[in-house]
Length: 370
Image (cartoon, rainbow, N blue to C red; front, side, top):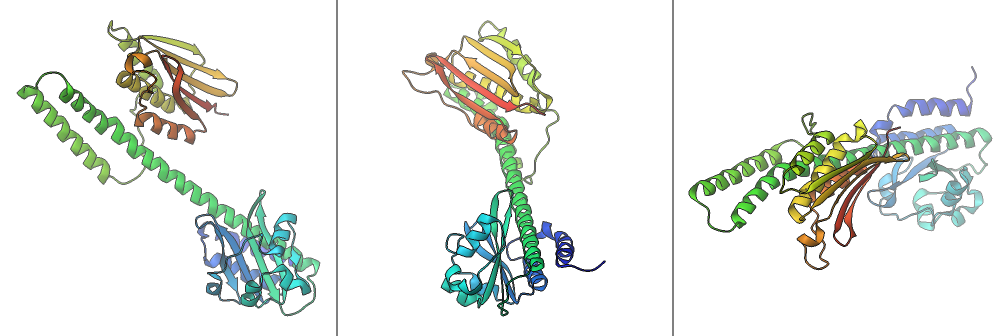
């Protein structure tokens, strides 16, 4: 089979794709891509400019026939480099030809040694990642094969940048999940234990020796638990023994049968999807904790149902004004805020606030699994 510029470009793409997972700013991958652009399009020099989302600026990430470090302090954007803006806007390879100094800023012309420049867009899925700039001493225009090769290599560079961005976002999501798990463990164990101690210490009357000893033991346990949490490696912890939604609801109903507790009303027009069970249990648990701490409810209404393609859970209590004076808003604990972060991971939303003069509502809305 005869070799063509398109065939050579595709072959080069297959070779370079094996390194996509190793891509990072300044990595050899982009240097190899710049080298391939020169070989396939008959160019002498090439540089790849990429938008760095961490530094929020465009920077050179790979080059061939050039000293990449000499571009470190150069401030460029698509708006300040007309040839780049045209290439990205029209999604085509653009040649400057004799208009080099009009299409490229003087400082870039000087450092690039630009004579006959072509620009290939790095864009994919409607997103601009950067451009590939190539240059040669020969003033002749690009032929169709060279133009197509540069275009394909620009798309490969965009694919590599998209893969790098997705990897970074996954890592950020993982770290956020680890921090939420850590905060959840501290909230569900240590803070609850210390909250019990604070209630005992704030009670009317003094503490006898037995109560003081019990408080001291609880504080000591909290310190041990805190030490264990801080020293453990950051990694998501599976909780197969964590109470599910029906378990939490059953506890609430059983507690509501006590004469001194609020009445519990459950309204259902659907079931909790298995994929949302842990999240629904977490929201219910935190909503009820807040009722006990910040309200004096006579009635708690739990509504479980489906609206269109969304699951809905509401926990409403009527104890706002009996627990707070005037228009003061009751406090919302850390637990609900953590549940709100968990809901974002499932594409959902947790809302909480006053809905009537004496009524407080916590609502979870999340898309049903497809």
